[in-house]
Length: 185
Image 1 (cartoon, rainbow, N blue to C red):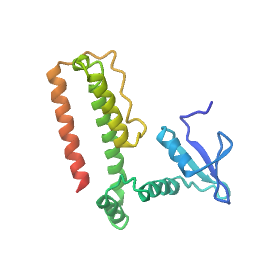
Image 2: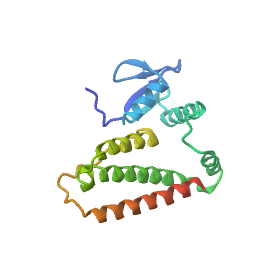
Image 3: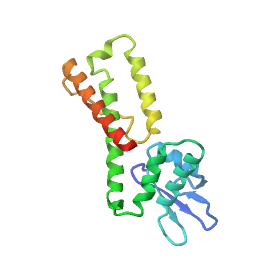
């Protein structure tokens, strides 16, 4: 069985074919995209030169999805990214993007956590169906990015008062909306 903690090594041959070293078969960009959606890290290496081509191929995967109309990045964000390559902002942009995705993962985990059985409202009729819909919505919003659909095990946690949970959810949603609106500007 493959060690999923290590990046999946993909070798690019001179013919530009991509070779999965774990399964000993050729893969496509769509296959690599699926590995990543399943939570697997990949590393793509040029067989001849040894150069790491991972970034180049990940950008190509994103470009293909965007060109098929699967737009995730708004036009103003794309413009800002292009601008960041020509300004001194390049040192800030990677950290900002990483922090934004981390915040999105954390926010989703907290929303899903509040929808679980540890919440007193979970016993209300229809809550299980609502929780399932919320999980499906979050997966659709995030493209099922790793770590974004998982909720930490709270079996040892003490249930909080219902009012505290509601206030926390309202604050988290307000913070998330504010941060998302800043991203859209």
